[in-house]
Image 1 (cartoon, rainbow, N blue to C red):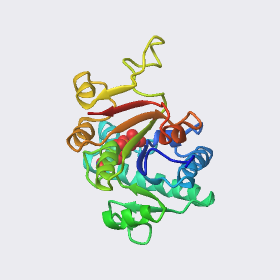
Image 2: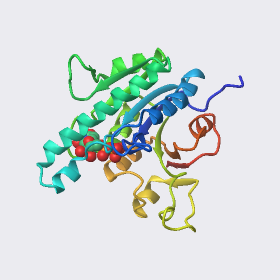
Image 3: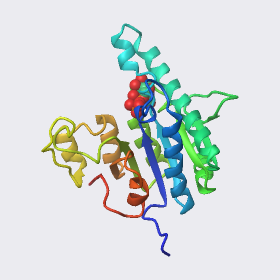
Length: 239
Ligand code: UDP
């Protein structure tokens, strides 16, 4: 029909910073509401949506470590930050009448469910949005790696990495007005040209498992729906 989407199941990666919006720190509920609207449009056309949220708006292990804290403790704090973001996102989704669940890689009985792959897939199949929180559950990883890992585990059709810019550029578009955007890159081009799209662990994981990644601009209204409908949007990374 007219509503035929290109993807049946997606894994959307939202960075923590994206949730800050115009706020000074933390979470801007207005941003969450706008994202909920866009995610709701996907659910409305029958797309199954898994989400991995970052925590960089609250804590980053590496930054805490630079300030003198033990790295693993900092990473634990970073992972807990992603759970807070996921709770805020669930709240926004539920207020928009979009059924959603939070699962955590770190057991947190009474607050959120412990991550379990088969249960997560069952929720997705039932049409619930599933927020995979606490990253991979391990220090020294990032939520980009968690997004790639969960995307592969739940057999998503694509990992969609939301950013503040339109895609992957040959140089920083914020500083170079003549920067040009790539429509397509291979995993090896990303690695060889050190394009810094995601950390190496994440890129190697998607490369080993042939999981396509699309980098797109979440601040551009309608971009998410457009790309899920097969429109030209962002930069595709695959084999
Ligand atoms: N983190 C971790 N293991 C993971 C994912 C995240 O230890 O599997 C910690 C790490 O300290 C990281 C923080 O959680 O800095 C927040 O995640 P990230 O920096 O990826 O968030 P984003 O940049 O997407 O907001």
